[in-house]
Every structure is written in C-alpha cells, then in structure tokens.
Length: 353
Length: 194
Image (cartoon, rainbow over all chains, first blue to last red):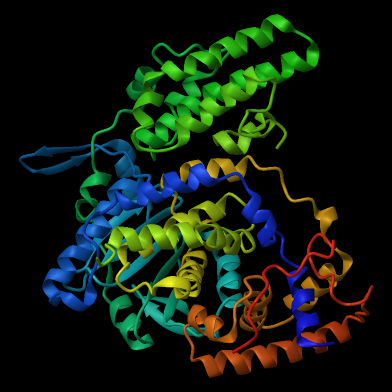
C-alpha cells in the first residue's frame, strides 16, 4: 500500500471533510465573530518592540479586557464596610467550600474567574506574560481526568503542591504542564505553558491556601459586582408573554453564576423553548389555536427589551429571532435553520434528551 | 502602503477561518464546541498578529494555536464565552453527521489509528485531514521539519502494522478513502511532500 493510499484511508476516518465544512452556511456568523474579536482590544501585542514592564502592562490590560468581555462571571455582592469587605451569602458559600488557592509569586494576579461554584471552578493567574489555570472539580472525577491527561502526555511525574502529592504531566513535544491532586472533596488541577519543568515547579510551589477575605479580594473587579438574580429575572421578563404553566421560580432561583448577557440568554431561551415546544406539540396534534398562540408569542420577541440590549453584545438574539422566522415559515427558516433543532441551538434542555 | 494589523488579521481570518473550523470539527466530540475553538484561536491570533506569518504560512501557524486551544478545552474545560456565540448556535443547529456515510475502510482505519501513540496518529491526521506537508506539520507541532518528516515515516510504518494486525484487506481498489466513499479526492489535495 502506497503512502498516498494510506493517507486516503486516514482521510476516510474524518467526521467532516473539507467539502462539507466549506458548504456550511456560516458566513454571516463568521463575519460577526471576526468583528467581535477585532473590538476586543485595540492594543495589539508587539513583543519585540516593547520594554518588558510596558509589555507586562499591555498584556495584563489585554487579558483583563478579554476576560471582562468574554467570561461568564460569577455574580457576587461586595459591600464595603469600615471593618473590611462583607460578601454576599452565595459568594461566601463558594469561598468556604472551594480550595482557596492563590499564586503568591510577586507580580502574579487573578485575571479571570468563571465556572465559580462550590463544586466546579476555574481561575487564571497571570504575571502579564505567562498564564496558569487552576481548576477544581468534584473528587469523583479525579481518576477520569488523570486518565485523560495521561493519554495526551508523556509518563507522569510527581510534584508537591500546597503540601499535597500531585501527579505531574508534561504534554508531548511541548512545554505545557499540568498537575492534578486531591484536596478534600475536590480534584484540583494546575495547568500552564512554561519554558521548562523547573519554571513550572517554581511557580507551583508558590501556590498557597488563603482565607476567605483574601481569596475573594484577589478576584478581578468583574467578578465582584452586585447582582440580584431574582430581581433581574423579573425585569427581563417584563412584557414577555409566558406560556401557561411556565416555571418562573426555576429561573429566579437558578445558579448565581451568570452575567447579564448569560442570564438574558437563559431567561429568554427558557421562554422561547417553552413556546417552541407548544408549537411543535400543537402541530402534531392538529391544534391550530395553540400553534397560533405560540407563533404570535414568538413574533413579539423582536420587541423584548433584554434581547434588544443583548443584540449589542452578541448573536444570541439573532438565533432566537431566526427560530421565530422558522416557525412563521412552517418549521424551516429561509436561512435553512430547522426549528426542530431548537434545544442545542437555544441552549435549553429538551425533554427526553 | 503597509497593511495594518487589522488588514492582516482580517485577511488571515477570511482565508483560514473555515479551515480552522474544519480542523476543530474533526477533533471535538460536540460539534458546537468547534465554534469556541475558532473563537479562541483567532482571539489569540488577533493579540499576536505581529507573530502571525503572512500568506499561506498563516494556516499551519493557526492550526498550531488551535491545537493548544483544543488541548486546553478537553473534557469540558471550555471557557464559555460569548465570542462566536452565533457561530456556536448555528453549528449546534446543524443536522448531525450521518454515521452511515462512513465507509467500512474508515472504521478499520479509525481503530488502527486509536492503537497508535497519540502523536503518531496526529501526524497522520494532519497530513491526511488537513493536507499538510511535513514542513507544515512541523509548524503545527512546534518541532523541526526533519523531526516531522521522520515521525510521519514512523507513523505510517506503525499504521501499516496495526492495519495488518486488524486483518485489514482493501474492500475495493485503493483510492476511495473519502468519508462519503463517493470517489471524491482526499480531504484536501495537497502539494507533494517537500
């Protein structure tokens, strides 16, 4: 078998070939992404032209700008008092349960924190030029992650982090390191790209457990901003028609880990999905009134205030509106979007899935 | 007039976004996650536009960035951000790939690839899926071109041995190794190896 035949055989294992990828109707979504990226920072990095200190500042600014724009940040409340910060109950719950670890090496700060719950969390530390990611997850996922990292890297080593024995992996052909260890009810992972293993170990050695106040005070400003989920949900639903039996309480009492855009997507997505479910069920049952009611409700979505606000920031409203257009057209929008795929497209759970 | 950073980025995005999407789609478990890989890859490219090679050399460089992004996003580590949200929603709404399209040869080859060391398998995939030359594979993996070339030869040798171990026999004359089995050329016509 020639090399060319062998390559053809390997090509046959691809789930998507280039013809299929090229034919996907995604040009407008790609153009939007391009514009979204180009407004993230106007200060483009020029490593070769900047003195180190200035470079560090620019990097931090770029990372902070990107983090502020793109992360789903925890919604927390910080009320300054004369005796120090007071934290909202849900924030304290996270801080008390999570492994509160900070990189204490000089110049290193937390530049990103999302997926911020007692069970699961991610944060990124940076000194302006390098980054280190810390993850925590339920302890029962530990062996699965260790197996996964072992699969993508060379033989494991050992490293002590925060006084605990961790298994250390170096990804093949690369200077990317990751260490995993168990910390009470959590599996913790520390990941980053470094010049060599010694540089990773030096930094990992500075990881220290801190108190609740110190940990929360180290979070970026975007993470500690006031947010009252129940009140915001009420405000977002004003003027939005709801189907009979719609569970508003479930939205009010959901996780605190949402910024306004993310919460808006969750709230409007739940409403839209409920209407689409009614429309699909009504169509199947031949119930013209129920189908017409659902369509009329979805057609008001172009006037929902929260979607108009979100449209300034991202593409979720367009996708929701496209579903209304698909319903109007009998199920498939002029762009080819099929309303039957609403679950993953709008980010809502579909019964039975 | 010298092109601006914005010009260079836009040109690289227009020329390569779909290729990076294909690279990601072929390597993620959930298709919609490929949108996040594209978003993060080009976010890095925008920040590092001064480092990005010009012209066709941008493509393997971008695959190299995407490789790092993908590795960071394995197993749900994805940073859920709103960049590329529309792209994500659109991809999520696409009909799923029909496994019935896959040819039988592809299934045996997939099993053989899984038995190789991950790096060997990736060299073969970059060559066959993305149509990269060994010099371009070297850029993606960050290794010298000679290393990529010898690794490709070794990976082919090992794949042949694994195929043999699995009792593989060509089901039809070789040359129909496309996912649809319809006689299309491989994923991408590629230049002769340099």
